[in-house]
Amino acid sequence: MVLTQRRKRVAAYKALSFYTCRQGRLPGLDKGSSQGGPGKRDQSNVNGKRREAAFRARPGMDSLSALKTVLVLGLVTGLAGCAPGLNGTGDRWEALYSRSLARIPGEKRDESNRDGDYLLGIKRLRRLYCNVGIGFHIQVLPDGRITGVHSENRYSLLQISPVERGVVTLLGVRSGLFVAMNRRGKLYGSLHYSNECKFKEKLLANNYNAYESVAFPRMFIGLSKNGKTKRGNRVSPATTVTHFLPRI
Image (cartoon, rainbow, N blue to C red; front, side):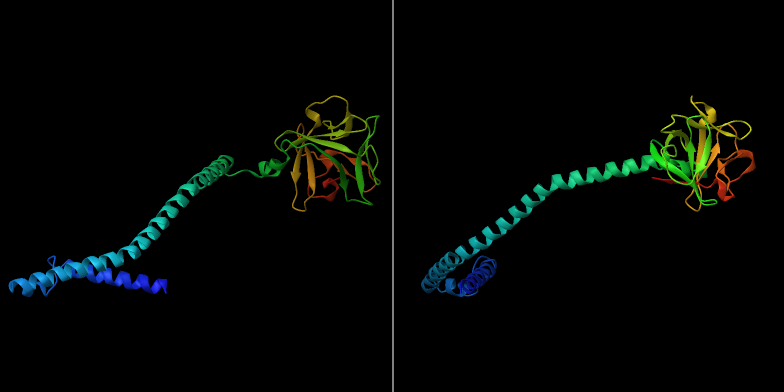
């Protein structure tokens, strides 16, 4: 019922505004004014009705105006409250975008860098498993010998540490000796770190790794089907004797 009264008041106000906008008077006023006294009485009656209609329409219009004002203020307040969050989110996305651009080089990476990216700065304790014969793990014995052993033991645990991108060292945790390769391709345990202790760790298509000597390129770590080490110049990544799986 309140809504119906408001609608009536709004309609009355619109009708009153329509007539008052036409030269400031109603159509019957010209005729009444030309007749003298009756026209003045009609005009006073019209003015009284006009004030009454305006008085009746005013509360409804005040309610509508107040409602519009509340809506506008609520909208402005909501936008003002959301602005810091939006700006903060935009700043965070901009920072992430800038960091992502900083990590994407303009030139294409070569294969060796791609294989070594995930190794940089990570030290791992692993056992290198070669799936030849009955399966062997590389072990570094205290006397400097390097062989393959089927069962896991304390000498087969290695610390794989990156020294350059894609280049690692293999350290026997128990023996404290580095896996090294001399110029003849023979593996031995070294007490001191040298260039012969560095190996390129290459990720193969079968998810195994191959280890190539940095000091003597094209020489790889390999185990025979009997668990003995093979000379690095007699093996290649095409054979499974050079494929090692790092295991925990």
